[in-house]
Length: 336
Ligand code: G3I
Image 1: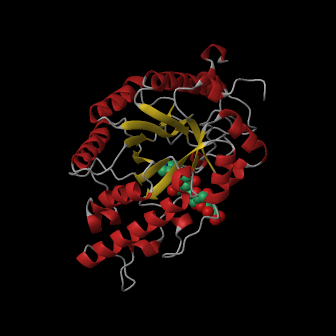
Image 2 (image 1 turned 135 degrees about the vertical axis):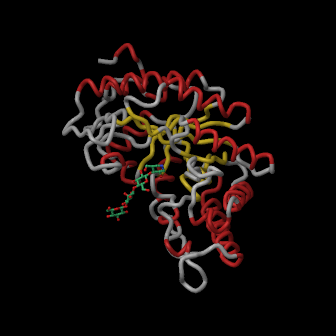
Image 3 (image 1 turned 180 degrees about the horizontal axis):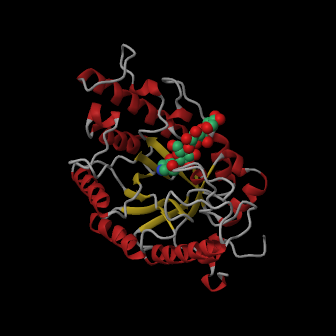
């Protein structure tokens, strides 16, 4: 469909992006992407398991073509992600004797040295081609007394892995926006734990530029008011805010499953996109990027997680045709 408005011509307050694979830069997917979007996030290609599968052996085979495409088409790139507890090879958390790391001073030094080496190499490889980095991903667990996820990173270094990651990223990529990214940040306890961490680290001088809200939501949750409270919480910190991984599941809970998306769910989804985009545009002073976690419904992580069933969380369908959700973003008067 080349006769419908480009998202990029309608939503001009901030870059609008999609998470993609290298394959999605080719053919009709690549055409759709460049037509509508102004930013991309490699969905997996910049994660540790892709970029440093073995110690000090770096591979950019997945990410380089994708980033070359972005440059050629004048799309901003969000780098995702330098530090995570998932998709990180086992060697990272293995001690000098080849055993799983425990919390010792020696392991702390080893793990922080591996982290520093990783960021120095990956961030330097791309330089200013990556405008924004999700420096750390999903470090909060609001069920813990201190609000911190009990990962190996945390067990071995406490908060030092976060301090090191941001400090080194700033040094190597001085022009990039440095983001701390997490999901369910609309949940007050999680939001507040994230706020407290960012406030504490920024007071120490750790260069955290902004907060990334993933916004993996569904047609019944959360409300616009809850989402607005999420944004307002961080305003006093003076950080930038980005919507980093938005999608809107057509399912209300894990028990549901449809062979194909029912029309009423697609309509409900269009209204969620309409209301959320209107909210984000009202907050354009705080928000500097909105990214969807996928280009079209033919490739979405929600088809396999949390359960295997066909979901349809994005703006274009499995045949790359505009859905009611697309009109929710571009022109709500045309939602049908
Ligand atoms: O690369 C292998 C391939 O060789 C193998 O044949 C295939 C068979 O299962 O698996 C492939 O790896 C998969 C990888 O995606 C690439 O497709 C993994 O199994 C699969 O677990 C992985 O899922 C990714 C997920 O993160 C796992 O951590 C999703 O694509 C990716 O969209 C998702 O993204 C995360 C964000 O990074 C952080 N926030 C949540 C978001 C959604 O889970």
